[in-house]
Image (cartoon, rainbow, N blue to C red):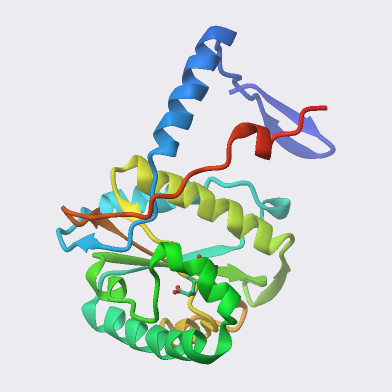
Length: 225
Ligand code: IYR
């Protein structure tokens, strides 16, 4: 492999993809059309999924760019029914309070088209839960390691994760019970990590309906200069 030393650090040659503008148009469109079929699904088929699929999905998330390449994320993969039960119980306790007293009516009105409520059966029904933790700082050989742009980095990794789940033929719901510090306790994560998002993953239930919602058209999301 061709190497070069830049400011004292070894760099390796980047092999750029060989692709024509025509191929680029086709590939970018195919990718868009595939990603556009993704829908958030809250109802799962209990059919098991090979763990290798889940490992590949998490490897994909781990390819995301991150501040100073610190990779400030931990993905907890849960299939243990007892842990899922504990997570559901704790999440529903918080959500019950949120829906009844914490969330203003305007927020609940915005959620009506999606049909959500405090009940979260998917936390037990999905074959896997992925709980993503963001690492405020790292620990290496007992030493604190500074992390940068932690929320941005973990958010990008979650985007990759959600795309990988869809690409594997599975569905997910991005769930953010609030507050979610109960996840730190149940999963016994260190104080350097904060729960970021909880993503149940599985096959969609055979007969599933999703809200009839639409994406903003290009002219509403793109300004060309
Ligand atoms: N966390 C709650 C409420 C909720 C909030 C938003 I913003 C959503 O897009 C969906 C749900 C829940 O999970 O029900």
